[in-house]
Image (cartoon, rainbow, N blue to C red; front, side):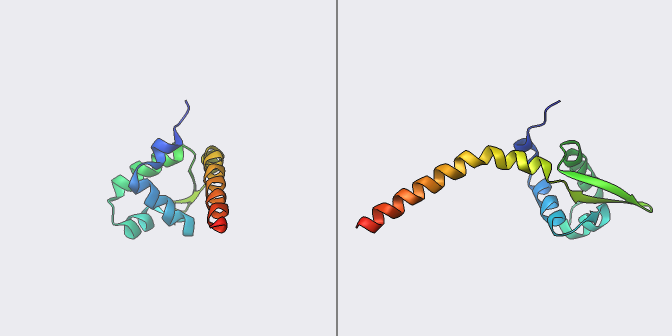
Length: 101
């Protein structure tokens, strides 16, 4: 089953979870405390992120510790590349135009 990365990332709580994990690995409890979201909600969003490949987890004693997996972000970045190029080209053209003025 193919997962639409943009559908996964469209949910604001999932983006907040990823922002927290970008800074450091976290347990579910640490994410609950950091985000002010209920434990069941955090667990639900982590499941979606894990199934889509955005996060991975390891077990430490009685806790699951989550971290970002960069591979799905590479696919998003690959998709964005032509748009980034388009903006760069447009801004370069604007700069040339303004330099002529």
